[in-house]
Image (cartoon, helix red, strand yellow):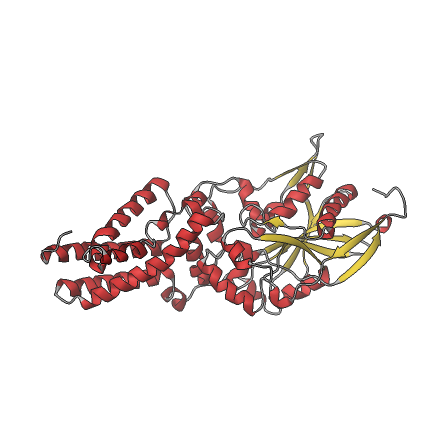
Length: 446
């Protein structure tokens, strides 16, 4: 498509550079945030896989009539850290004669935005579009030992121009953002939606996927050495992500989208079909290519995994219960007090997300019945009825009730609860049963 007048020029506005230390995948602040987000379901997981790429500070005018544009989907393979396990997706628009070559990235944000972490916890994070030279993108991810793979798209000049104009409009709009939702509207789904709008035909997937759930999709991208990331996500997200999802759900994951694109077709109005991808190229080479391979857990990984921690808690609960049955209550008192403190702290987080956050599925989490902050309401009862506000009464009275409610909700809603959490539930059940028996033996009223 040619412009009506040669006087018209398109300005490709490159947004001001965001400092490298603000990059979601680098820097001290990001690492600190990462540890917080692991407890918050590693939402930077899919959220963090959709990383921010800094942009250079420059403006360049390119005459429309001099452009011979082509489009490609750029996929960055997963990194070794938990925040980069899902990979990343962007769009490359270039002129075949070298007049321009830019990557459009819908995973950009600034951690210096006011209230960023608070908004993230509430699921109200706004992302934007950044634009960067392809050479900078390749260099950056090569340093991170991550492959940059290009899928050249089989699009007509008019289709490419349409795609380019949509993204250029976003980049040129001051303050343009979109509300990021890490399963349905992210760095992978945004380019795909614009691509569909630009095609003269319907995009169809020829690759069929086995029935699965969002939870299984998320966890399938986590490596053995990131068991705590998986555990954090499973703890935070509820039953809503345990329903069977459609083929389209896979497009929210960069590596899944990459595989689907390789065999996708465009079906025209006349029924004609053409492959979406004409060629696939890797744009960089790595000094240590094995670093991008899936990690294998070793003995230390298993020994420090959530399941190992849960088993250790279970063994301690059995040990202190045995000691208590023999008349030694001190160990049981210490164990129960620590258990109440930990479950209360975890419960505060889960209930905060349950009540206030718009993050996916946090409002259907049955683990809010297992981990709850009710101790904060129970123990003040010591000022009303001293016996009711005691540790023993909490373990023998309230804890069994909450465990029963948790078991019922788990069965009814069918949430895929992490094994480590179930082991903890068993440990609490043992402590409640032993405490009830001990109180009866001591002639205390239950």
